[in-house]
Length: 381
Image 1 (cartoon, rainbow, N blue to C red):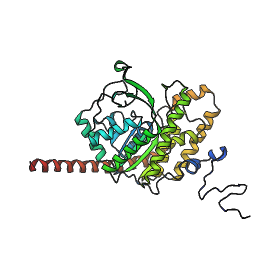
Image 2 (cartoon, rainbow, N blue to C red):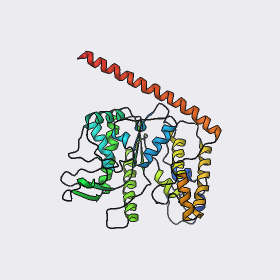
Image 3 (cartoon, helix red, strand yellow):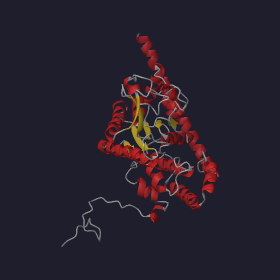
Image 4 (cartoon, helix red, strand yellow):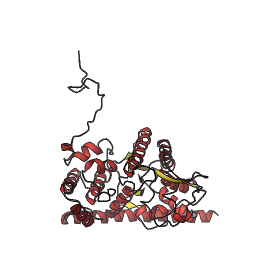
């Protein structure tokens, strides 16, 4: 009896033409593990985000983190510049698929919600001002890259209209007769993600789209179950829906970056004492991995391996340490990223200056074109 060459020794079943095995604990501790066991199959064939690319990044934490990181390298991050658009003021505060879809529908289709849904960190109203909408539309119209991070599936909504809030309902506006809570279904999550993707493709057909899932878990659940299990459901629905939309699109400019998996599987002790926010070295690993595969910088595989080696060493110390040591470490590292060596600092500053100059030249060119169009329109009247 012949054995199919696709069936490994010791297996009684055909394994298919493609097979990637789950790594064991040892290989996962190697500096190559993130690339080999997590990033594999998801990265672009070539780097494409250059200094002249106009980038919009918003949603949950990863979009804001990568926005700040790339902005510090001199890339043109529209959502990191000061401005009146909501996605500039609260780029990491739109955490569900409805909140993110609303920004695209508002900007490009002038769809205004029937009630006040948008509130800031302190429950302040973020209204539907037309000037803000037009500024949001301009940011979207000029974007070459969209980086969108989705955070959770639990939503609060207005029952009579079906409209969904950015987050919970402000206490002074809560009305138990109309404000309700639910977990978004897989089907509606897919529909909202598909809506976001379709709108971008309709208005920016050549833009790159990068979806990510935030590793930051729920602070609390409004379900009558444990927060840990509710968080597992919340993330699973989003991850599954993202995969369904991404797989169906078969779009060479549509990517999933596995920031969530890097945090959850790449480290033994990824989170700070709140068990929600990753340590700085874990975040830095994601930032450097993104730069290595998406950005046209000189940061290479050797540089990424060095970063991961250092991060794994830190992770090992945290895993073996006491809670008090972990708290002290988290306090010392809060808000920090891996410090560069002097030579690397000089190189980064030179590259940053170059990218800033290229970015500013492009912004100036766009502004001049806009002025010429405005003058032409005024003369036509």
